[in-house]
Image 1 (tube, rainbow, N blue to C red):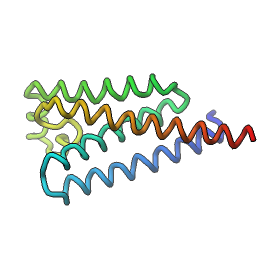
Image 2: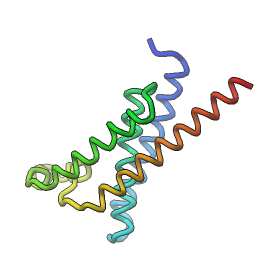
Image 3: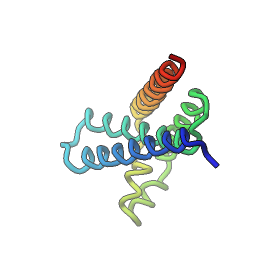
Length: 135
């Protein structure tokens, strides 16, 4: 059984993940296409993946969280070098939101930025909570 602290952490992570999905859908559906919007979408995707990794493994070290998140994001981006994501999206269009369609090396940079953002904020929040508990 998970501790109350872990349950609270998971609730916060789930809420943040849902808010990230809402923000990503808003960007996808409402913002005009362009390089900046693509970057924002990539960052939000990486943020979501990192939040999900933290949800599954809330006690994992920061570098494990970052490694798993980057591995997923980079793997999905490299998968776009094949025709599979486009075929899947042709059959079920929402798949495009998860797997994309075309490879872009810039996406790798934005994924790293999104992962770093979440890991840094999570680390600051955890250190802040520990400092309050120690005081």
